[in-house]
View 1 (cartoon, helix red, strand yellow):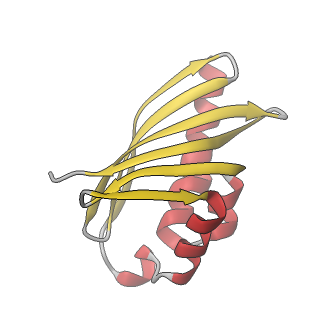
View 2: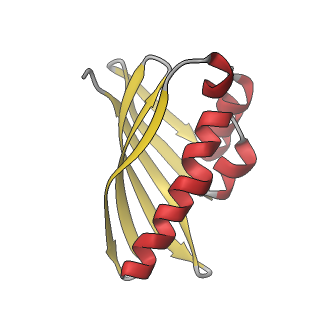
View 3: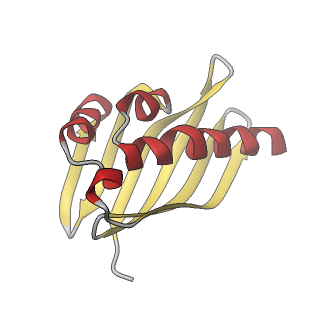
Length: 123
């Protein structure tokens, strides 16, 4: 269980957060299952994308790194049960503060994000 939490932490810190920050869709894509869905709301507006639609958005926007805007990815918690897990993370990027619930599944001995739920919150 501790080993799995550490593996999920590594996915978040080595691929997910840097992928978002740098606009690196290779890193970001490596953290996500090919059929992953992203759902939630941004500034109160419903948000729904497939993994590939999301990666296309990231690819075509100015990266947070190049924008000079603040970025911070913080792991709030990770709960693991056998081959499933949920990570709660906070992502500060551009002028947004996202609370995210990332569902993970261990597929072929690799932890992948299979679902991303997000909501932009005011702090």
